[in-house]
Image (cartoon, rainbow, N blue to C red; front, side):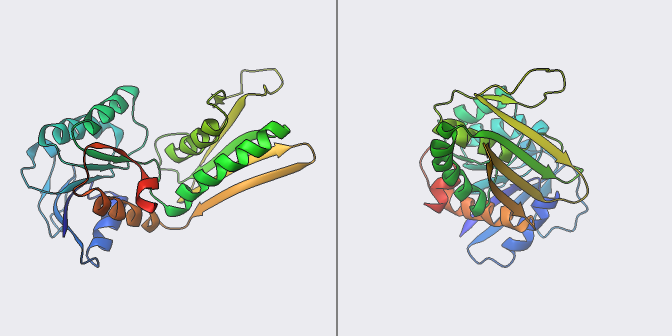
Length: 251
């Protein structure tokens, strides 16, 4: 049995994870952490991770970037493994994640779905073939109107997969409104759409002369991310210190 602390337990993703765990006989929630609580959870809930004294095997985090400093410091002190799903982290927080991984197991992923992580692998192959043939690369992502960060962490991760295959030589461009010049060769453009209740859509476009190749992924439910986070927590239990990602989980 894997015992977890669910950080951000009363958010949409936290509630989805909790619902799935109720049906899973291999994992349980020892405690939750959330600034807002209605008292209806079947496990104790603390307003701040610093107040939590409950023992657990792994923390699953689906919160906000503003709460990350406290969580990372707490996990560092307790040396508890952590599945980090929150996006939009600052450079300083990313450095804290790196330091934490030197003391305990940390799994960080911008997207927990199996499909996205398989897409990352496919993009590396596509970039290695299409970019030398003169194809330009653009990434378009769409999310619900409440999402705070843009572009999404998943869009950036997809861009990183492409850039890795191309030797890391490409510049990321997020706004062309002030530029009056033709498109540079070594550029990956990002566009973000926010509206309605879109769960998550990502298109990676390879635009060549007289042909376009598009890799697309659409999420229809937050449950795909919750299932991935649960699988990651089970994987991380008992693992040695280090920085992991979903590629380790899916093999």
